[in-house]
Structure formats: structure tokens, C-alpha cells
Image (tube, rainbow, N blue to C red; front, side, top):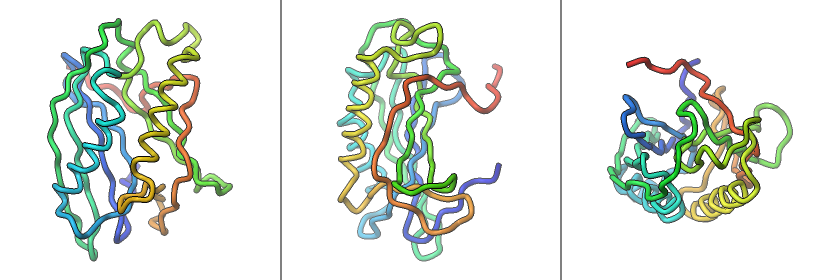
Length: 196
């Protein structure tokens, strides 16, 4: 599948977590509006600060480390990259969920049709084995906590120069997000895992 085109004035922020012993990081991507008054690294650092203010070390399993944010943005037709490095180790001591598991977050736009439906697959850094049933359902308390955090993340970006948007594979104008909804059942990785 080809990468999603990034229209002028927009970018993709990649949130990165590394699991102890893993060869590659878990990544979650978010489309956003660009603030051209800041350098790419400044913008990445601001997004990093907003993320970690919501998804604190106290909400992450202790075998996961938040490693930072990478952005790719389109300013006047030129792609610019920026990074904000972090090393925030989780503090929750609990058995990890299967590494191929992901928390699915629906990106709501308020518009109908496949084009206006988006998803983000978050790493299992925020759920333990005991938070998910054998049928793959996240328990009520954990689901509520994750939804509260997703809403706080959305709110922290809304109304700023970096509003969250849904980017489209056809390269058309991005659509503003209206909400994030954490799904009650976990998902699995959609690509093959690297064997090391």
C-alpha cells in the first residue's frame, strides 16, 4: 500500500514506543495541521509534550518506553522532517498483552462514507494481559481510562495550530476530526512481524 499523500499545510506525526527486547518500535500515526511559525523539530517537540502529558509513564507498562515523535510535513510543497526524542519508561508492573495486539481508535469526522472513516492502531503499551478477555474484549475500567486519555489527547490538539485531521489516500483535502473513540475489542497487527 503506498504511503498517504501529505497535502500542503499538513503533516503526519508518528508516535513511537519500544518494547523491551523488540527489534522495531510500535508506531501510531496522526494527521495534523502544520504551524509554519515553528521549525519541524519545535513542532515535533510540542506534539511530544502534549502526548506525554496525557499518556504519562504511570499509564504505560514497565517493559515499554515512549521514544518520541517523528513528523513529516508539507510546507509550500517541500517535505520537512522533525524529531523530538524521548526516553520515558512506563511504571506499570503487569504482564504484557501479546506483542501483536493493538488498541484500535476510530477517528471520527462527522461525515458519512468510507473516505471519512479513519483508524489508529496504538501499541499495547497501555493494556496488560489481565485487561483483555480471552475473547479480545478490553475490560470496562480500562476501556474508560483509555477513552478518557484519547479524548484528552484530542482536546489538547484541538483549537491549536496543530488540529488533528484525517488524511486521505487520494490526496484530497484533509477532513477535521470531531472525536476519537477507543474500540472495545483489541486488534492484531495488519502486517507481518519481523522475525529476529
